[in-house]
Length: 420
Image (cartoon, rainbow, N blue to C red; front, side):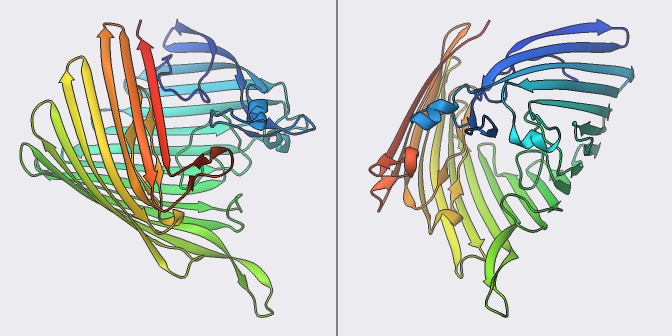
C-alpha cells in the first residue's frame, strides 16, 4: 500500500539491491522490481545450500567461505488498487533464482534452485475500523493465511485481533510472520487478541493474549505442541514529571524432555515450560532535555528439564540528555544475576542510528553503555556507541569462535549517515 520506500535499517540480510519502477495507471498502481545480490550461506560438499548465515561475522576460514557464497536474482511485480474510499486490493508475485540449490526448496521441486511466490491482500480502513487479510502461496501450492483488524469505537478503547494459519510446506526467504515461536511463517496456527483501555488521562491499561499451536513436529519440538502468551501493562502518569509502568508477562512454551517408560526405555515426552516476567519502570523528566529512567525486572522459570525453580533479576539506571537540537546522548548502567542461561534477562538498547540491540544477560555481572548522535550539518549525522559487559566468577566469555579471553566484553560502533 505504501509503494516504494528506502530501506533505512542496518541489517543487510533482508534488503533488496536493484531497481524498481512505479507506474501509475487508471485506478491502480503497478510496481516492477528487480534485485540481484550475494547472500551469505552454508554450502556442503555437493554444492547444496543447507542454511543461510546472517550473523555478519567472518573471522574463521569456515565463516569466510560462507561470505557471498550464494547469488539470488529476483524479479517481481506488485499491483494495488483503491476501488472505493478506504478499500484497497493488492496482488504481489515474485520469482527468485539461485546459483546453488537450496535444501528447503527441494521439498517442492527437484532442482531447488528457484522459488515463486504470490499473494493477494485486501484491507479496509475508516475512522474507527482497520481490517486486513492476506493469502500467500508458493510452488508447493499450499496457502498461508493471516488476517485481523483494529477497532476503536471510542477514543478510550482500542481492540486488536489476528488469526493465522501457516502451512508446514510453505517456505519464503523474504517472509516475515507474526508467530508464537518461529521466525519464518511456517507450520503454525494461532489467535491473538489485544485491548487497550484508558478510563482516565492518568492511567492506561494494555493487555494481550496469544494462543498458538504447532500441528506437526518442529526442529526443536519432536511432537505436535501448543503454547500461549499473556501480557498486561499499566501506565500511570503520577505527575507532570513522573511516569510509572508496571507490567507482567506469562508464557507457557512447549518443551521436550526424555523420560523412561514402564520398561525403562527412554521416550520423548512433551512438557510445558512456564516463564513469568515482572517489570517496574519509573521515569522522571527533570527538564525538557533530561530524562532519568529506573527499572527492576524479575524472571521466574519452571522448566521440566530442571527440578528447581530458577529466577533472574535485572536492575538498571538510565540517563537521556538532549544537549541541543543537534546532539543527543544516552547512558545506562545495569546489574544482573541469574541462576543459569535458562533464567536469562534481556534489555532493549539503542545503537547507532537505524539500529537497536537486545543483549542477553545471564550469570552475575554488570553492563554499561553510552551512545550519542551528533548532526554535523544539514545532511550529515554521526552516531556511536560504546558498551562493556563484565561477568563475575568467569574466566572466559562465550564459546568457540565467539570466545573472549577474560571476563570483560567491550564493543565500539561508529556510523556516519549522509541524507540526500
